[in-house]
Image (cartoon, rainbow, N blue to C red):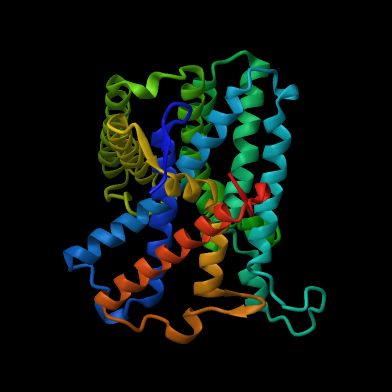
Length: 364
């Protein structure tokens, strides 16, 4: 298998992005195919898979923030002169547009006579593409604020993440549909049906941006074990902070709110993501090269996301597997199908590379 030297690449970022996208693919595939009778949280294997799914999106968001801000801060120029600004804006609006296109309420594009309220509700749901699109705009805004105020990136990015985290329970309690149309209200609370409202999900991108900026300003730091231990320590501190915060909430409210709308749950997940990232950096220290396919997977995350979702869930112009075989198989067959989907995505990115079909618009 073709490998790529680590000389000019941050190997752990390639590994992190490849894991994030493959974990997402297997999670969606298993969720579509696994029979309902096998979804038992008392089963340790299913519980482990279910818990891992809860970390898929945070890892995906975090890695997106790290990668974007790392490339952004490698440009040693003022914000206004940074070519990554326009690239980021274009990509943000592409992501937002694709997010809505995948949930478009009618296959006719312009004829809406027979569109039902339920179809409009689905269209207005804020999903991962819209979130990442606005997330890119958010972290670029933070970078701009850091430049104009002369504050450290680290203060601004962590401050931005903490503001989002601690506004989360406040935002969720507000009935935003009293003030805005559902298309806008969905960005502020999951109570409207949105899967990824800005609160608290922007925090993972902002936290990733902190690490991305640090890597850009310290270009060889990831080659040392000290860096890995620092990440591990930061993750443990976040876990400890979340558990202490849960104790405080218990004292205040008389009941734990950890698994509901709590900043402590966000801190807990962020801590696990940072610890996982530290483990990836430990692994990367031992590698001089990695299979090219891992780089291709990380480079084509958007394309993989769209293609595998269209196959599984369909689009306004096609039926998905979910309409025919929703939750119909035992664990063994489901796992085989998940590997099959992963294999299909690997085949796709290899063919794109082989025939030089790169589309920079759909690359990260």
